[in-house]
Amino acid sequence: MTPSERQPETRVTAEAGTRPGRLLDLRDVAVTYRSTAGDVPAVRGISLDLAEGEALGVAGESGSGKSTLAMAVLRLLPRTARVGGEILLDGEDVLTMTWGRLRAVRWASASVVFQGAQHALNPVRRVGAQIAEPLLVHGLATPAEARSRVAELLEQVGLPGWRARSYPHELSGGQRQRVMIAMALACSPRLIIADEPTTALDVMIQAQVLTLIRSLIADRGIGLIMISHDLSVLAATCDRLAVMYAGRVVETGPSREVFAGARHPYGRALAEAFPTVGDFASRLAPRGLGGDPPDPMRLPGGCSFHPRCPVALPSCSWREVGLWPAGRTPGDAPPPDTVPSPHTAACVHVLPDPEAVPDPVTRPGTGAGPEADPEAGGADAAPAARPAKESA
Ligand SMILES: Nc1ncnc2c1ncn2[C@@H]1O[C@H](COP(=O)(O)OP(=O)(O)OP(=O)(O)O)[C@@H](O)[C@H]1O
Ligand code: SF4
Ligand SMILES: [Mg+2]
Image (cartoon, rainbow, N blue to C red; front, side, top):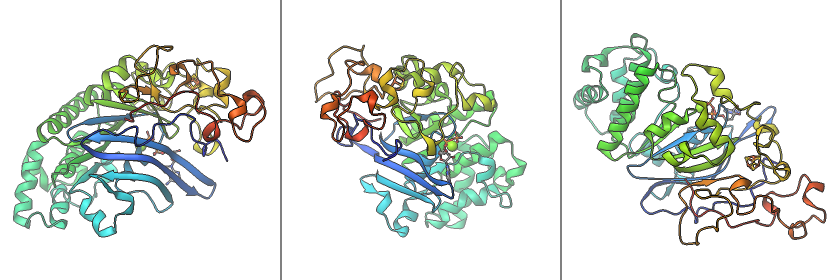
């Protein structure tokens, strides 16, 4: 078993993450791309959920698996991707839907604002026709009704109705992003996934688009998953945050708590990064954090973050912990089983005793101590402590 296939020793199970009224429920979702060079485990066992009218921000460096996770929700990944786990949309598993059912769900129940509006829009079709398409395909409007709905949608996103006749190249980056949002809203979906909706925009337009997204969510009670490398943007827009690293969620909780009091060292580095809009280097490595994100095909054993972690313990090179209640100081007793923890982090420093390692004798297949067996730990290791009660 490779390090990337091993499971953390303390995991948040789907049952542990149960919250009432969930619109979307991701259970242990894993995505592996097959490539000529080998398998690429881009998303590794993510459990997240989202309630109606709630906004969840997903943050992480370039390559952490954010877009892969987003595309998996509506089965928009290429054929080379193998998806595992469950993706429940209103309780129905997207992964087992027929193509007909999936077509009905896309746009009408859930829609995506794709990363890079410039490339997502068809350059040779007027934007009005592109916004109208899902309405016509789903039989939700006649051509005449679709035209007036398009004008209405454009006005809702702050563009004049006559812009329907424009081609994408006739619009600015911010205007194209607004067109993408209008498209996503066309069929009044209950869930919108916005993948880096403001990354390519300048600060002023970014603020306008974020204000627009916030007001649309509030007015319509839509569930939103917003993806960005910029934790500050997400914290200002979303109710909850999930921080991804190397295909896993390593910290999750209420936005303010995660942004102002991150407990995972990577979450802290992201929160302190304040990346510059348009500065590609700041996407690769948050300021103050050395090293590069790991190659998913060559993940380090133990905690994937350990080669870059400023507070790593010796056991971090072989031991991987799952999400754990983090909204309290280390050493405090964990909460009772019945109380969900809203803030969790996957780091030994939030365990009741960070230095305590699982008893090597209880780890099946090993007779040696942890340091003597760098491949041990993971799924086979005895839980060192009780897992958190809630996923993101
Ligand atoms: N079609 C593919 N085939 C093989 N590997 C892929 C494919 N698409 C993505 N990957 C790999 O999967 C990992 C996650 O990619 P993904 O695009 O999900 O990251 P991301 O967090 O969205 O990054 P960014 O912030 O740059 O958009 C990366 O290592 C990437 O190289
Ligand atoms: S588990 Fe260890 S290496 Fe990973 S973030 Fe925590 S201290 Fe750093
Ligand atoms: Mg991406």
